[in-house]
Length: 226
Image (cartoon, rainbow, N blue to C red):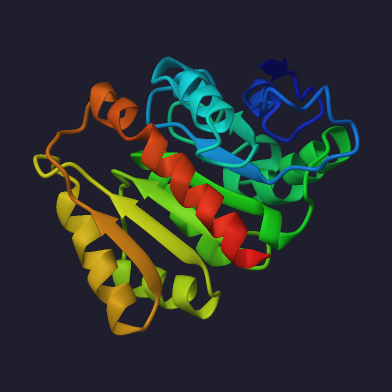
């Protein structure tokens, strides 16, 4: 793991980010890897995905050959992913500043086929919105118990952009209806979408229990885009 301070970003201190590098990264200097940008939930920061166990899940999945090696980038969006200096949105920061910084600093596959985005709760809704607005940057997007707004418009943009979409939400989660509505809209438009509604609520243990599934989705999306 690396914690990177992004002093010159428009987000100020909130531009910092965590980077997970696969176990083979240092030993294979000629290799490049796909990248997943993972957004945290409301009230959290760039350490949140670490707290729910993403490092152990990724080490296990990669180490046992369940998924191919990948880089995970987890930025700090502050409690609500608010605007930064000069009113720049977090979405613009991620697409115009963070992605170029990562591609310049790490051996990433710096193309749409090697890039995905996902998030938990508020971060999940934002990930869907960012992907819908920048379909040439991402091949897939994951909404993990996402806060979904305007599912019809979101579905139209995601489908037009040709993105693979993963949605999951606990059966007892108050945000369940948003994911169900979005999946229905995407299906109606012929979108590439998968929805899971397992038992669970809007708690850390729910996401921890499903990390392996998330990594599998991102891995399969990268394989499908080659």
